Image (cartoon, rainbow, N blue to C red; front, side, top):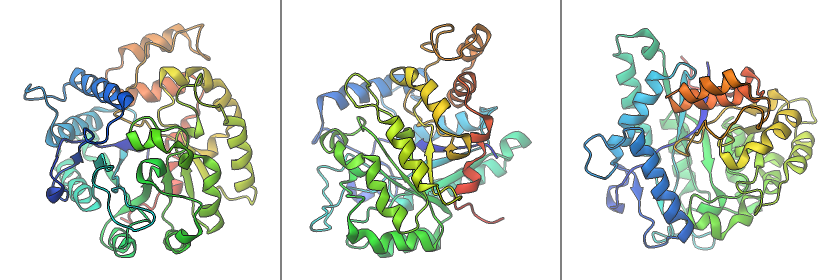
Length: 360
């Protein structure tokens, strides 16, 4: 099964009392000048894809999922996607939720119920190609929360969660803190992988302010405790002229983690189609073996085809470029971009080897 293991959801709820029924998004009370620009760009890109179905100038949670369903069911390259929850920010010292610094909150209960709804809808499709598609649940539990044990137990016992998702800087998680040992032991004993953001984070204000929390070397602690880890974005910089390129150092770290014969540390290819990362692709393709990589898009981060110019960017033939430009579905476009740059098709199916997939 060809799976996109890194797919974000979004919405426009602003009521904390309703987080189990809607996606909470409110950055105005904690915003950064860069994220203000980024959010406007993302909104414009989603509008260009038709997300504002009622044309009222806003993209509601319902409209976003309507777009997601349309994208998945029309994809010719992707069979399933992992939709990602995002837990709130909790103080590492007190375990109390910080509502001001929580800019996006996607609860496990909300997303789990939504995925059940989406999969039930797929089952009713008359077209077998749509009927065979699948939505997977990527849970998120912040280990700083006082009730992390009960929340994680809910995820593991009451849902079909395939992974746990963290953005350390955004959620104020010190990944290498020994106090998270019990959390890691639970993940390890239940064979559920940790998808952890690695590298600079510019999507959230707290990500910009606490980017040191996102360094790949912090992953050593969960690995020590037997957790299978997926490092997002191959630890690549977003803006190479600002952020340090540590691809070679990250590869050495992966090589050590996987030296025992089993792949315990994976990397995903999410957001590698960004124009600012194009020049890094040859190094990534050459450096990382395909059996260490998992495909991901990072949608709704824009997947633009036009910057991947033939004779300019790595291994891009004119006919491949034309095909990419003609491809309307963003997930298909992302796959075609990566294929043209030399990524193996094997990475599309590697997620099945890692995710805690529900039994039939």
